[in-house]
Image (cartoon, rainbow, N blue to C red; front, side):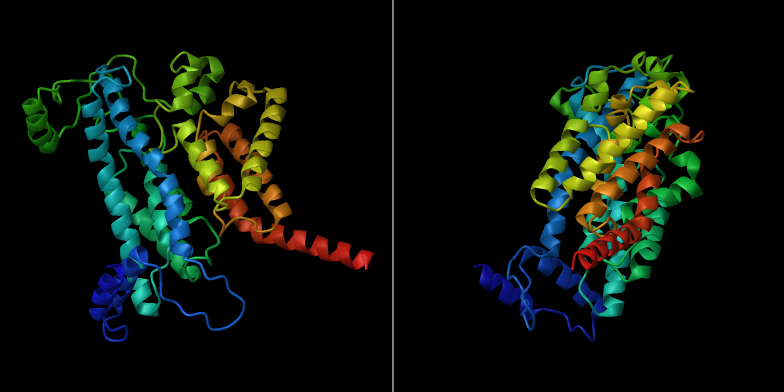
Length: 418
């Protein structure tokens, strides 16, 4: 049956020379669905259906729990601001549908722009679609705020794919993490759209008390019609933001007033399980850890980098706790593990095999320095209380040097013992 389907598809395969764009599109979907029919020609090889595309798909699969929770949390934070359905599971249908409608455009725009550019370069260069774009396109929505304007997102994705990936030769040749490049571009080009207190809660005119919600015809006509027919609660366009709501993240509160300021607003269970404002995929720590363990067990992500990053974070956190010159410095080091995007950065960003260090000793150094610089930037930067994005991109730049020094040290040791 499968062989017949493959033969049927191959019968209509576009001509690579005459129709390069259609061929790239066909080849991308064909190799996604079926194992590529490549012939080993020289050298020593291991014949296995686990090619690069399927390796990348495992990373995408490990992100799905973050997508599921992030979708729901968008709706949960939206209704918390309105003082409605404050219990996590209250109004679940409204929260899930609102979050899905908010996330779907971000997901679609990211993939259309990224894959469109990838198809173009694949057709121009005459090669197959490179699988690395699948992971980058899956990661980008998870590191963005839920209310980011789509045109800004499109520019950020285009910049990251063209400048960060294609300009260096494609998958496996890029120096910096492509997903983080999209975020850092938006961070510097449009800082008010990706930082502050208002960007983490979607669908509000502002986070000031009395501000109105922004429901469209889809919510008020389509969804309300469906929920009314089912006898469920509906979207209420008359709701406004309640008094005392700020939308501030735990990191912003810690930066302003230390740990006491955080616990006045959020419980530790909220911060651990992820019922807090933040980027779409970074909030639920247990689900991120499931993905991290899965990637480590599949040997796609390096546990050495993860553990090295933990050690660097703990070491720097203890040093800054000892110094204690500001309220943020007094926040106990162990709270830094779960009040921001540390775990997501550790599991899915720092472990990118293309941009991370390759040697075993280099991975320890690379991870430790990300933890060190990430904490320094997070706590001492007066403008933005987070540091993993900049720390990872910084160490991406130096990872080849780290590997070079490790290899040179090993060579010198061997020569000395020869």
